[in-house]
Length: 207
View 1 (tube, helix red, strand yellow):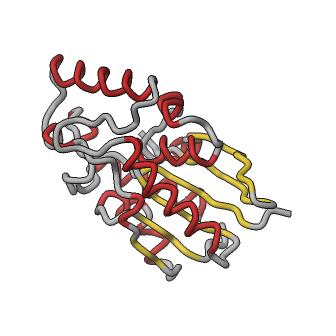
View 2 (view 1 turned 135 degrees about the horizontal axis):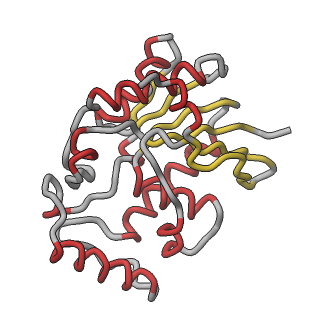
């Protein structure tokens, strides 16, 4: 029997997502129409799970994604530790070839073990992992057995690597989609993945 089951979902689509504009932790964009449909489909699919608490980041796109669960009366907490990674001067802007090269150079540094590498004004992998580890420790110590967490793409990539005890550079391997769901069992001091980036709930959307 699992000590606890944790459902970890990425926020639904924002207009910035659709337009390819970098958000990070400094852009607090709401969901767009498609994102609201995604959030609704996710709620309809998982509303009967007996979640004991909903935990989101401090950013509105996560609040809105799990609004159905919050409105149903499930206790809700906001944790800045699971905010999106800070992308510094790139936030609020579309990617350019030059910006993409800076990003690739940073990832190359991470691959070499230099986790202090960061974009100008942004956050390093070491800084991101420090707060993700803080959140993981917090989750381990909670009494609830079924927990819903809503976070962000890069933050979740880092979290998944840590939960699997992978080196940080391997977070690049984790795929994430808007409302992509990971289900993780915490049992006997370790995490076991049951589902990764699942989007079958989106089949409920009538187009």
